[in-house]
Length: 252
Image 1 (cartoon, rainbow, N blue to C red):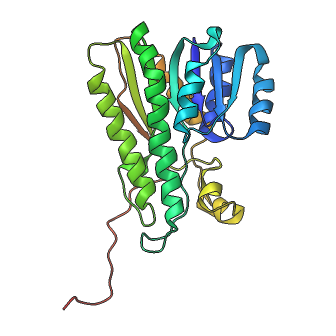
Image 2 (cartoon, rainbow, N blue to C red):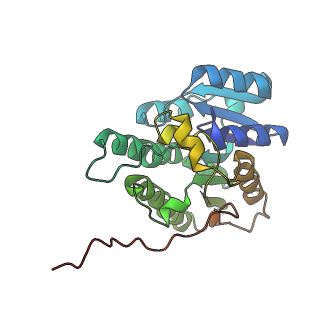
Image 3 (cartoon, rainbow, N blue to C red):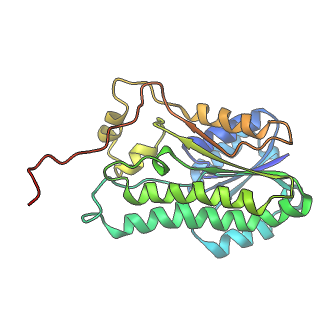
């Protein structure tokens, strides 16, 4: 089977690529960073994968890429929409609007473009699986999570909408919602500040990229009549905060 994974040059995407390659899948590796893409492709075995340098935010390139896939990689069975990011933790009235636009363009529009490009082939063959990478941030708000949480709430609802649209077909849809996971995620959020990123996971054991990859693999390999709609997973040491309260005096 052929699996297309976006955002393979780090984090969940790279972990998925390595796991699925080990399990014998042919993989279309999609990522922006050419050097990392080539290194991963070589590591996985050049004959079993197809590396494609692509930014999922570019609608025209996404559709052209899927349309021009070589014949031995055209029949995609699984799409893992992993490309995404969180950028910054500033409050809404102080954030650089470019950060919001980048998250929306990647987490929402890029995912939609890739889904729309791949989905007709799955429908035509009447089989396959789309896995969308959501987040617990799509269900539980936190200070500074504003647009990032909004994009992941969109992913969750979009996944449910796809499931509704595909009723009567054998194509399956799953939304994965990880909690705290130690990948490049926090480093990107803090614009490369490793010290800040490391502090996020201080004195606790977060999830790993492999934890998420194995969860996705399990979902995909359920019996064909079973669709896992949504999975939410967290580290044992992560919990749910109480609602925030501003104790600055009575409002008059």
